[in-house]
Amino acid sequence: MLGAKSYVFHRRLDYRYPVIKYGKGIYLYDEQGKKYIDAVGGALVATIGHGVNQIAEEVAKLAKRVSYIHGSQFTTRLMEEYAEELCRVAPRGLSKVYFVSGGSEAVETAIKLARQYHYDAGNKSKYKIIFTWPSYHGASIGALSITGKHSTREIQRPFLLDFPHMPSCFCYRCPYGKSYPGCSLRCAVELEKVIKRAKADSIAAFMVEPVIGASAGAVVPPAGYLSVIRDICNKYNILLIFDEIMSGFGRTGKWFASQHWGCVPDITVVGKGLSAGFVSLSAVFCKKKIVETIRKKTGNFIHGFTFANNPLTTGVGRAVLRYLKKNNLVHRCAERGEYLLHKLRTLYKFDIVGDVRGLGLMTAVEFVKDKASKRPFSRNKKVAEKILQAAQKKGLMLYYSIGFVDKVNGDAVMVGPPFIVAEKEIDKIIEIFSQSISEVQKTL
Ligand code: PLP
Image (cartoon, rainbow, N blue to C red; front, side, top):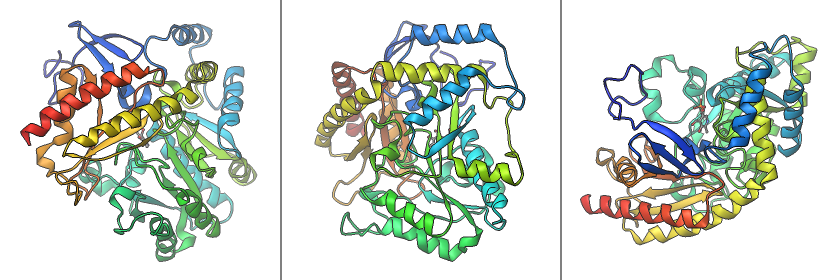
């Protein structure tokens, strides 16, 4: 266990870190010999599990071939093939891919791309990005500016850009107090009001997570939501950007979550599971018309990172894509996801379980003080954190989602194991999760 004495500036300063020695399948093993079920693949990243030799061998092979090439000077055959293979599984019409290292970089790239597209198309007043609340789009200043999460914004607030926002589509906690389908998708229709208020000729894009990730805990929209926002964006010449950093690449049981509803955005960002965690890789997909507009006017996309379009990470990405396909893992994720949701629903037996939701292997359980009124626990009770601690003690790793009800309160715990998870392993996850909830419920 490593704490304050470590030379590493760790992300958490109030925690003694177990030292991981290795991982295999859905399990991690620390130096003390403790075994953990990695029921969230870190943060819904490790989609094909740990210790996959085939990918490890590919990393070594690629590292031997070339150390580095710059994205403004060379390409590789592998990267070219990879982009083509990716576009074949992406929503139709997304036929250009820009590779970066992380999700925040991908989001920064997407919003700058939207801006340059409009600039080059002669719509120079368009620059604002409309976003939703709750949401999470990243830690860099641009991405944080369009993130609807109070706790991550507060300290950095003076830096943040002032962009228009609106409530997320969140049926369990409908911001308009309505219920589907009687609501007539009021939350989608709101987009038009926000556009009119902010003036359409100032808006470049609308950024939304088709399935909301850790800012609210696997929130799935009802049928029709995405197509209504798609139509509104078209009407006002606003690009629709989907953030699928968490929901993408098989996690919801389809390659892209948006494919569940057949809705094609103009730009989409994917990360986390794209490389299954082996290397730092994220990607920005866009329609050809965006790139062509830029090519014809400015000539180049004025943006770049040292590690963009990197030969090693894209090579590993290709190996992961082929591994997922060969082992039919996206389909398996859909199947296992149904099983997991079915099992998670048994947790409704607890007084504090208010909602069980998700799609594929992107799921969450929301905890409430009162089921009937859906009143959340006061944040200082730290319910989600306590459940995580109890589970970790028993060797189960989960992920929490907090503050989504009213910017302060709200407790949910996410479950999102690698796609290789077996039904028996899901049973074990539920057993330990259930014991942990029971333990914590007694203390509240
Ligand atoms: N967008 C979403 C939906 C995410 O879940 C995350 C990370 O959790 C990001 C963007 C930012 O990605 P990264 O942490 O790789 O910068």
